[in-house]
Each structure stands twice: as C-alpha cells, then as structure tokens.
Amino acid sequence: MSLKIALFSDFICHFCYIGFATLRGLRAEFDFALEWRGYEIHPCWPAEGMPVERVASEAVRRAAWERIKALADAIELPMRLPSILSNSRLALEAAEFALDAGKDEEFEERVYRAYFNEGANIGDAAVVGALAAEVGLDRGQLEAALASRKYWLKLENNALIAHQQGIGGVPTFVINGFPLVGAQSPDMMRQVMLRAAERLAAQ
Image (cartoon, rainbow, N blue to C red; front, side):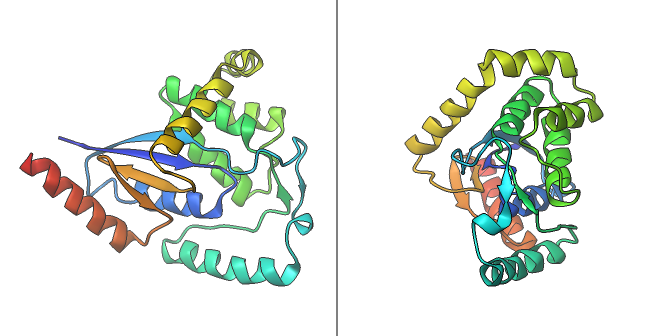
C-alpha cells in the first residue's frame, strides 16, 4: 500500500521548490502518491510582479539566499535568486488544471524551474500558457479554465483545508495524515517516510 502525501506549496517559495525536489528524489525508495495543493502565500503582490528590492534590503536578501543555496546545493538542485517577485495565482490555478489532466508533477517542476532558474515571470498569463503547452497541456483549454475562475475556487478550498488542519505555512507535507513543516534534508525526509510506511504496514 502506497503512502499518501499532500503537499501544500507555492511556486514563489524557495523552500517549496527544495522540498518538492527532495521528495521527488525519494521516488526510487518509496511508493507514494503525491497530491499537490496550491497555497498562495503573497496574494497582495501585484499581478505584473515587482522588483525584489521592494521587499528586502540587499544584506537581508544575501543572508537568506546563503541558507537557501546551501539547502539546494545539498540535493544538487540548481537555483538562482529571482529578480522579479511574481504573483503566483495564475500558475497555482494552472497547476490545479494540470492535476485534473494528470500532468501535475511535470507542470509543477517546469514552473519552478522557469521561476528559479530562468527568471520567468510566472504571474504572466502568456508565460503560464507557454509552460503548460511545453508539458503537453492544451493551452486553449487552460485559458478557458482560467477565465472561468473554476480553479480560483479550488485554491480557496485548499486554503480552507489548510486552515482546518492548522497549516499556516509552506511547504507543509501531510504524510498519511501527519504534517511535516518546512523543507527537510533527504535523510530527515527518508526517516519520516520510513516511520509512516511502518505505521501503514502495521495497520
């Protein structure tokens, strides 16, 4: 029986990308079903994005980036500090569309890489559409779904579920009902998943 893992995450969160990559790196060792749950952390950021300088000083950014880079380097995950802080709403809605189409992991990885490696503004509808098409999603169907706001409601529901479960930050992994907050090292994630698998086998 496979583990069930829900991942509450946002594309503009450095630690979410690291956590996502760490978890995917353990696929060869564990049988698990991953359910993405988009969780928007900065809904107030403008749709067109904004320069990173508006949020923090260079010294603060440098200190934060050193920690982020160390975690990314530990799992050999290339990352660059974005110069534009994107509003993630459209990308998160598109991820829900990708989930329904069975291409969620491919799309999520592509969006993360576009934002943290290529400097793409993932708040731009044209960028999101192009990334979706790259992983085989129907761009016209996606645009229609975004226009209908169907997936906006799904994100609101994700936020409600998170609140009901006491989740207030990302990334949060809910592994067979047990929450694990924050990006973890591969060894720590492995230990947690081993314990979850043992509990599941004992049931």
